[in-house]
Length: 102
Image 1 (cartoon, one colour):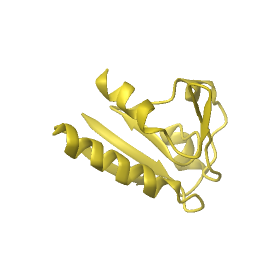
Image 2 (cartoon, helix red, strand yellow):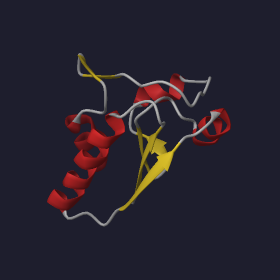
Image 3 (cartoon, one colour):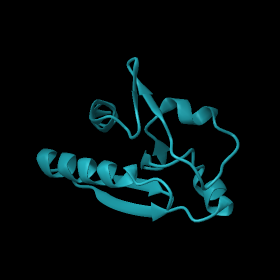
Image 4 (spheres, helix red, strand yellow):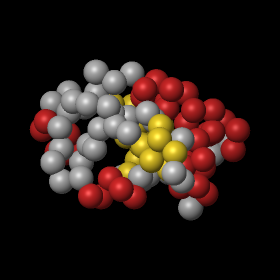
């Protein structure tokens, strides 16, 4: 499994996300390659289908089903997450756990 945490320079919530993902990998003793990806410009944003920072993908798929609705990719901006009626500035742990369980 490959997990990527994509982010831009403006939004620092990726650091919380990175630490949370690292902790989950250790707790579950998962065989995972964890990668950090810095999205520096709109060309990168288009390449990675970057829907805002932070973005987590597992084997190339965004963990947020709503991300598929994004069609205009930009390197700037923080990304809100909405999960089970709650708002967060980064992916909630419960969302990550649900996706990682498959």
